[in-house]
Every structure is written in structure tokens, then in C-alpha cells.
Length: 329
Length: 275
Image (cartoon, rainbow over all chains, first blue to last red; front, side, top):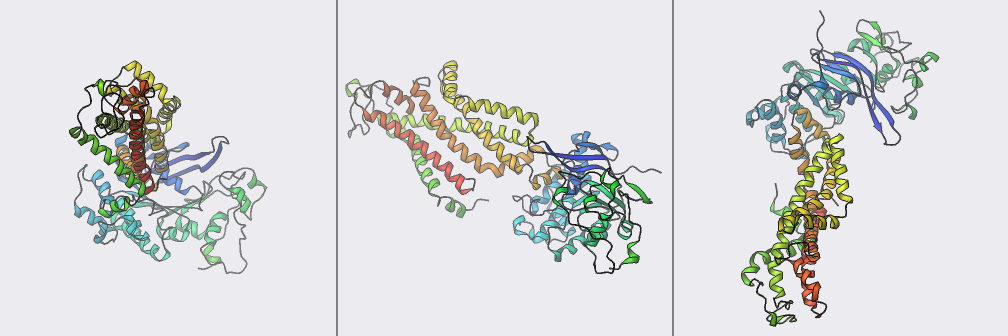
């Protein structure tokens, strides 16, 4: 039986104009199609500038797609009425990457959490202190910080507060836009463990946006790898990580796993200036960096091709071998 | 949360301190002066054109009225017109700037083109035109000054809004479901309030001068004593009788009060780091 996805992205593109005279177009997201179901956590993985954060903005209607359509529970997001949009806000929340910028500096902890509580739970009435305190407990923050301002909190505490703000409305789905990338290594694990616990206890699904495959592996059921605005590989986390089909996925994996092994498979050149998202290479966007590129790759961009069940990649020369046999980590 | 130490710190700024002292002096004169000095309406022609003396510290005018008394009574008009019209201009300008800056698009574009048109019309020409068309009254003068002063504030507020509307915390508020009005007035406006305040005070200066200008030209309210009205009558015969005190006193008063408000504005900008 066909289930209705929570989100359905249908050939979504987002382009920005740069410069009034030059009309240069920056393609942040290019022909992005994805179904997201409410019982799975999907990871969106890619480098800086791959368009990951733009996906988060499109999904929370902070931005509208230039082309293509986005559906939430089968209804097009663009045409949501004010009331439906407000209901949508109580179901889908976003945790921003930068906990220093995303908290309003004039609101202390209490006020920060009171805003979503007042709007979504209290029906406009001021929420009780116990509601606020419960939220602090949920994200393992001490109740004594109630009157503190964001500038008085550490990065980790701020990110916990952002998470508490998102959870205040009892969302079903939370988009995490690189939630730990601005934090010190030492406190990342704490935040990730908290997110895992909330997923289990509160029944929340996530979209986890990151450039870090290691943490994605930890959290996600499904994974989408992006390169310069396009999906280049998608599949269940295990499939993608064990049998990466796209050379770029391999590159990302190499950046986290130990490379010291005999007969190194890939020798990938560094990303060059010319392949920014402003002047995209013809054909497969990745071909200038790809050791397997052939003439074919420089002409037409490859389409997503199914390899095995839900595992698909956009590559003319997908890698065949399983990683687990050839290397250990 | 303003602490008393904040106020002490604020007044360690010399501009703000001196501006406040000057302005407060004139406000006190306007409030209490008329109880001390009698209304200079009664003409006494035998006392005309007297130079400053103990009886008339700032001399007399062509009708034999004390210039000091005229200044004291006139300060009420100058201050009232200045503050009321600047307040009106600030309210209009802030609202237009907020809406045009936040929404952008066609609404913002139309509002800013309208603002530009208002900005390129020479204000004095527009003021004279409106004054003649609407007829002299204090309300007219306030209306005229407000209508010519708001575009400057709208421009400033708009540019401040533009730098703030895409801040991550504003996006975060939107995702939380905070309404547009609350975002504008609770998340954006408090941040730009110092700029608004500084501009409002600077507008008071412009308004006081504009009021005097309208009176001086003779299209203002010449039936009530105001600083501009003193100058209007003075220019007719003061030079002929060498009555320098009649010109100099109101001129200095306008200059001093204008400077007072301007110093407050500049001081606020300095303290809040907007300049």
C-alpha cells in the first residue's frame, strides 16, 4: 500500500540572483526530489555550499522554491493558509546550526521558551513556570538558568535551549541543520545522545543535515548525499556507508575513515575554484574531481539509477565493491 | 532593564549631557517662565526700540514690548510645535520604514519611491505651498513639518530593518510561529529604537527651525508670539533702528535649542554605537 509521505519534494530548485547588473544565478538546490516519511530519520549529507541548508529553509517555508513543488501531507506548501501554516509550525520545527545567532539576545531562557508555549499550547495565555521547567528537564538543562540571557550560556547550553524551543510545540518532525557543527568536540556527543533519546522517548523523526558522515551514521535510517545542489546518492544508511556507489560518497567516507591501507583506491583532487555553484561544470558536476570520469560524464549529467532496492546513485560508473571487505575502521 | 549605573554612564557622554542641560533649561523656561514674566501683548509705543537695560534685559521691539517676555512666551510655541511635529514625523517614518524594509516586494518598492519623491521636493518650497494653501494655524504648521520630515526617518529605519530581517533569530521566530506584527515590534524595533530616538531628536531641531522659518517668511501663525514671529517683525524695521538685540536674541534662542536637541541625538547615536 502506498503511504502518503510527510514531505514530498518534487523537482525543487532554488536559485539566487547575484548582482543587479550581471544577473548571475547561483543555483543552491538543483532538481531535488525526495519523499520523507514520518517514521524515519533521513540524513542530508554534503559539503558547505552543497545546498543542504537551503533544503531546510524550503521545508520550513522560510524560502519558496524557484521551481518545483513541495508537499506537506499531500498539500502544497506554497498555498497553505495562515491557519494551516500555523498548524504546520506546531508539527515541523527547525534547529539552526548556529546557537549564537538563532537565539534572540533580548529574551532570557524563560522568555525564549514561553514564546512557543504561549503560541501553541496556551492559546495566547502565558504558560506556567512548570511547563518551562519541564522543557529544561527534557533537554537536561538546569532550572537555575531560567533568568539567564543567551550571552551568559555556553554554546552547548544554547544549543540545548534551541532544541527545547523546537520541542516546546510538541513537533512530529524536527529538522536539525548541522546541530553540533558549531560546538566543541567534547560536547557534541552529549547533544547527539540527547537527540537520540528524544527520538526514542518523544517519537520525533528528524531530518539531520550535516557534512559529517560519522554523526549521520549514528542518527539516520536513510541518507541522501548532495553535491553542488544535486542528490548524487541515496539509500538506507547501511547501504550507502557499506557500499558507496558514487565516488563523491567515497571521498566523504575517506575524510572520516583511516586512509592507511594498501593500494589506495581513490586519489581525488581537491575541489577547485571553478566548480563553485555559480559556474557549474557541464555534465556530471563532480567530473572535474572524479578519477573515473570519462567523456560521457562531461556531456550529460547522469540520472539517479536504482542499484539495489532503495539504494540509488547518479553516476555512470558506480563503484561495485563492498567497503567492508576491503578495509576496516 | 535600565540600571542607574547605565544612566550615569550615558551622561558621561559630553554631548548627551550638554544637550540635555540646554534642552532642559528651555523646557523649564517654557513651563515656568510665563509665571514670572507677563504676557507681552500690550503695546507701549513710547517704549519702542529701547536697547537692553535693567528694566528690559533684552531690549524692546517696535511696539515697545519686552523682547525677553516675547522669548519666554514664544518658547512654548517653538517647543510644542517642534516636539509634536517631530513625534508625528517619527511615527510615520518608523512605520513606513518598518513595513517597506520588512516586506520589500511591490509594497516596499511603492513606499520607497513615494519616500524618494518626498525627499527630492525642496522642503521649504513644499512648506510654503502647503502653508499658503491650508492657511495659517498651529495645526497646519505641525502638519507641514511632519509631512516633510518623515521620509528621512523612513529611509534610515528601512535600512536598519534590512540588516536585521534575515538574522537567524528572526527566522527562528518565524519557524516558531510568531506573527509578523510581533516580529516587527518585539524582535526588530527594539534593536533600532536608539536610531529612531536619535533621529527623532534631530528632527525636533529641524522642526524648530522650520517653524521659525515659516513664521519669519510670514506664512506661519503671525498672531501668536513665537520665536519665528519675533524675527518676522524684526526684519521689517530692526535694521533701520539698529535694534540688534531684537534680531540676535531670538536667533540665538533658536540656535541654542536646536543645538541642544541635536547634541542629545548625536550623544544617543554615540552611546548606542550607531555612529
